[in-house]
Amino acid sequence: MRIDKWLWAARFFRTRSLATDEINRGRVQLEGHDVKPSKEIRVGDLITVVQARMPRTVVVKVLGEQRGPASVAQQYYEETAESLQASAKAIELHRLSPEPALSLAHGRPTKRDRRNLQRMG
Image 1: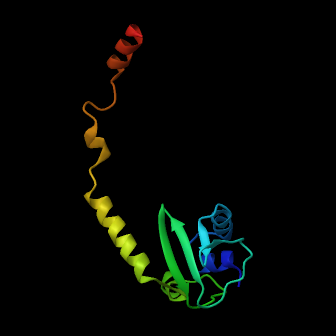
Image 2: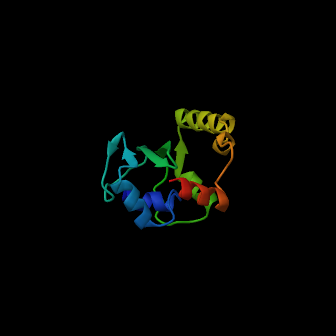
Image 3: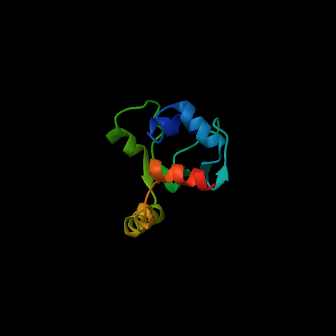
């Protein structure tokens, strides 16, 4: 089965064309190597997918030909323990990081502030 079709059937991407684009951008790897969308995969292959700057490593369990409900799609793969730990750690770091907007002292300039800045500049 083609990797782009499997990624679509396993619900990693909404369309096959999105899966193809992500593969071409190098955000999908098979056994640690970049691949083409037409690459054939087999049960037991290790696939790394980067979504939202977060890499997920999964092992192919089933080669599903059709896209079905999410509950069925989750049976197509099994996420590795290292990948689960890395995502949990990233989620925790994101939760503990400060809100960037709080570092702004005054926020956006008002219309009056912009006019004053234009007069001075």
